[in-house]
Image 1 (cartoon, rainbow, N blue to C red):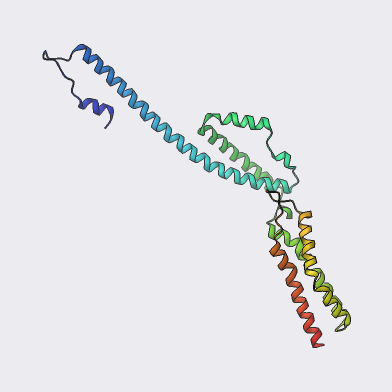
Image 2 (image 1 turned 90 degrees about the horizontal axis):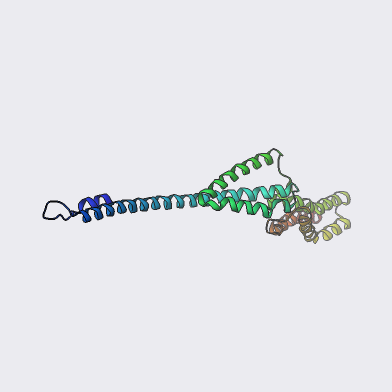
Length: 234
């Protein structure tokens, strides 16, 4: 029940002469005006609080999206050779951004939506540069470019020696020498990943060691097994 309904339901005590006392009537009128004003303030405050809460939740959602897209763009720009110092806002820029956010959640939401537009423009500009270089590929696919060729060097050499020398002492020596080479290939790939590709955002390299070990080991094992069977059959 609203204030108006409440005050209409409350009777005014009248004097025996047929009308309320002037002082009581004036006080009652002032009370009604104050009650109505207070009720309006309360309703306005509740509406403002609800709008502010909605703005805060919307701003959080917008912020999550902007952060994710900025992280992707940061990686793309680093792959393209942009210095890390150029991707960090300067103190004057931070101060100006903080000042523009001083208007509360609504101002923050407006700023975030403007940032979404800038991020979309940056995505379009980066897309116009064509596909990313291998340094920007997923770690597993990128590291295969290093581990794969190294893993194939020794098996290919062993096969060539076997085809040239046949089932003789040279092929046996090549087989024995090639047995520890997967470990050497993996170590070389481990170093190569750190030399050829930039670190992740946390400053460490994702060398995918399990993938590297399998990549270096499987061709060597298959080749050694095939050569061993050929030598035994010869």
